[in-house]
Image 1: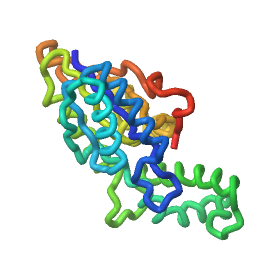
Image 2 (image 1 turned 30 degrees about the vertical axis):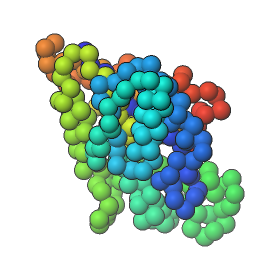
Image 3 (image 1 turned 180 degrees about the vertical axis):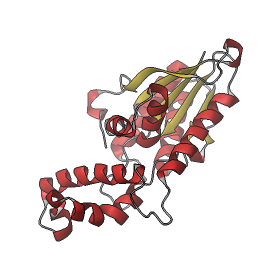
Length: 240
């Protein structure tokens, strides 16, 4: 058997002009992840191309190396990038808000503070639902089917490169690709996948197992653990 640990990046700078940057807490989460990697030992490390993904992998690896554990250089896989959430919200929030009167405050400016945050959360998931069901004219925004294909391709690439028995892989990615991996493994519909994605915690680990070529049914993925944060102290348990 081989194992693939899918890691969500550390906390990014939510609300800042440059979201794609680890917050101070995100850096601490990445350091705690490094202690886990030092204990686990890894055959390979992969990372998506986003700065928050790359930096999480780099910091975690540096911590493990400083503790005396040699780990391989991270390999970048574009297929592990997050889905185009910000682009979708920017483009389709007004359309979704017009279709749902309860969200009108997001368009006319009447929703503020906590009310606005709560409405934005509802609107975000409605935008993702419309995207996954092909209800929007996307233009240059990545279609849902393309997102699915690239994430599935990244999973297949990692498994195919490490068919030797006992391979241990870590891949730093984001909530969307982790949710899609669970969709594949558990046979989920899109609604259930998005419900799982929204609870994936920063720097959490979702463990998958696969059969090596020698064991037959090569590439078959099974779920061993989801959203694990036992390597993080409670103050570092965050969802965004």
